[in-house]
Image (cartoon, rainbow, N blue to C red; front, side, top):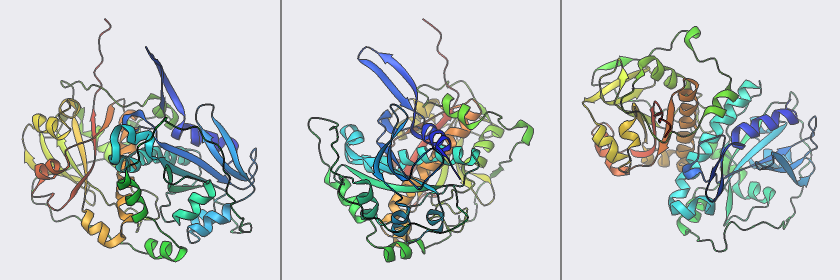
Length: 438
């Protein structure tokens, strides 16, 4: 059973403020997980029964002072269990964390593309949350199947501004007894506006409504869908990835890694990483996420493609990662720094990195199988795997940064192998450039 200290640890190392830097206009605050533009549009709420040090209630997590603000008093755990069609992980959980996305906090800069960022940024945060929960000995799982309206109502969200994205049950009770369903009255709490004037991007509201689930029956039907996506037979040269011996694995605690992590701003283009380091990253990041939409356990929606620039033991070139065999298939050999520079929106980072990892998925097939909510799932999974890559890279004292990209050009570069797929996410890995003091 988690207690208040456990929740504080999980919340802080998922969304707490871990760094701050002074600049001429004031202070910039950085949080525990990577986020597009360091805009931190993901909010966390806690729904819990009585725990050691914390009364039952619905709370909002405030990272500014590491506090929980009480929104509703009482045990609303049955409300969440019912909203998830009695998902066992939720029904047996003594506490739940709910992740929400606030549109304008990200959209003022990225406009409607923010809806993709919801998945990426929620995912990188979830990678931290799952890792810290595991280190605390507390089971945790990503739950994407829920009645959107019921969860939004419980948190009293203005859904034109903020929406629920996923639930994470923390811990597990031996008994399945739940309290009675409680009425979630409108709170009408006063909030401080983010800006004097906010611009609404209808496409985001339409995407969210189109991918929402409206009843417990619809949740149960959606969760019951499962399909294994297997790769085609290899056609090119393959390189086996091997997990390094236990004694060579990074020994830092997850807290040390998270506190050290920060998106790399400049890579050393003359540096290289080892095949063992890359193998460790893939071993950790692709073991399978605990999520209600990934069945059977270990399933994965996103395929990983690489542009290798400088990895000892690997030819420079374009590769495809085969999860089932734990191999990298060479698609085409060559130096592709110029191409990586272009694909990453003409930025230096993907050209100077040691390796660029592109997340691609067969969106048409996913949407046919999982409906519109499959779009949320594939973006969220990419962010969570990307978050694990961040952690595995920084555990080995490497650097990493997430990037945006020219979607169609990415597919064209990796085709014909990637034909009919869509570009989802991009992460560059390398050694940070250590600048000499002026």
